[in-house]
Image (cartoon, rainbow, N blue to C red; front, top):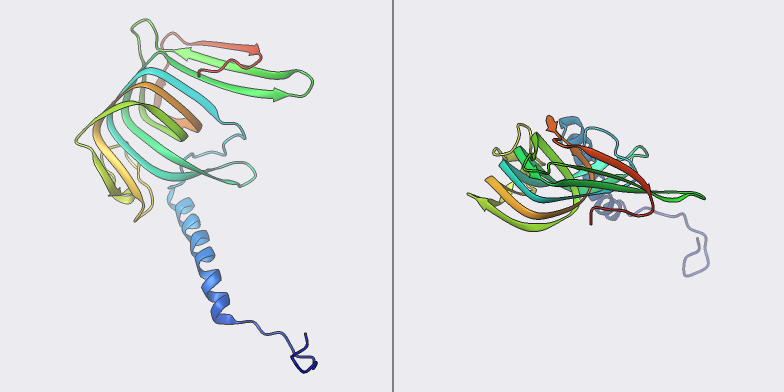
Length: 206
C-alpha cells in the first residue's frame, strides 16, 4: 500500500476497532456454547430440514412457560424458535402434517390425527419448538416479561438464558391452535384414536 507521497508502507490493524467489532461475535458464540453446555438449546436432537404443521381444536394445559431458544440441524445451522412448554396438556382433535418433495414423484404428504371423539391426546412435559403460532388463548396468573432463567411454572428445566424475555402462567386454554414447528418433545404422549396416512400431493392440517 502507498501513502500520499507514493511511498510503500506496511498495513496496520486498528486493534481497538477490531476488538470493538469482534467482541459481540465472540460473546454470542460464547453464549451459545454455554447454552449448549447447560442444556438450554431447545430440542435435544438434531432437527430435520423440514418444518411441520400442527393444529388442534383445543389445547388445555397446566403449568405454561414460553421463551426464546434455538434448535440445530445435522449441519450445525442455528434455528431460532419460541419454545412453548406445558407440564400437563390435553389436546382435542390434534392434526400433524409434513410435506416432502421428491424428484420425479413430486409432493408426498404424511398426516397424523388423534384425540377425536371426546378422547383427547394427553401429554406431560410437552415442548413445542415453533416458528409460528396462532389461536385464541386465555391464561390464569400470567407473568409477561419475566427473566427466562427464572421460570418455574412449566416442566422441570423449562428455562431459557438469563436476561432474555419470557412469560409463564398457571394454566393455558387455547382454541383454533395453528403452529409451524421444527420439533416437539414430551415426557409422555398418549395419542388416543391415532390415524396416520401418506398420500400424494399437498394435504396439510391448515
